[in-house]
Image 1 (cartoon, rainbow, N blue to C red):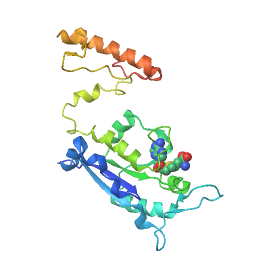
Image 2: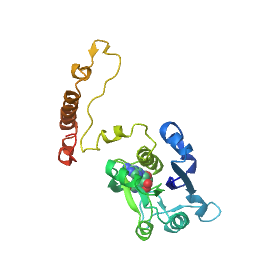
Image 3: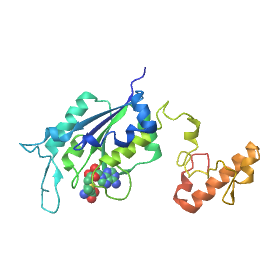
Image 4: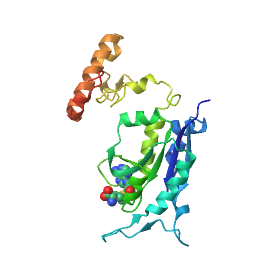
Length: 235
Ligand code: SAM
């Protein structure tokens, strides 16, 4: 059997994992060995009796910063166990997480995911260990753990064998560049709302054309910035 996709998470809150990823698709895939999860408690590498992982910012200012020596030692341990994995730091300063980045990661062997806390991580460790900073959006969370869970949820569903009807993945929002068309299911009539006739016509050509046009309409209305990013499919 192929080696499972390896998630290696460095955090001061290992109890947050697998968290919501223990249920549903991701949970079943974890049990089935389609991906693996290892957490490394950064506090194990902390300084002194209190295992301190942070200190005051050089130059003054508010908050605390995660120490380079502590995070660096934790990373060294993780990297020694799996040197082939890319190293990601979840960070609001990072490049935005996208469907194409999720695909790129899913096609690789896994990832080391460093979860920041406090004001973030000492810049030297980011540079010295070649951490690739990734953001899940233009807002600030209290820590990188939820961001890592978001990234993992997005990757795991792309792994072979995780989603039953894999063809459906290629139809989704962002896969072709734009947003997806609207979906409907039974009942045919609900509180006076009807399913569009074309979807009940059985004419697959017309249905495909309607979906293409609807995807284009929704994308133009909601995310015109995506229109130039079409990869030749939906929009
Ligand atoms: N001082 C930092 C700044 O202004 O960019 C914010 C630090 S935040 C309170 C603590 C940690 O949460 C970060 O180091 C990062 O790991 C994580 N985090 C917060 N927002 C994030 C986001 N949008 N994407 C990814 N990680 C995030």
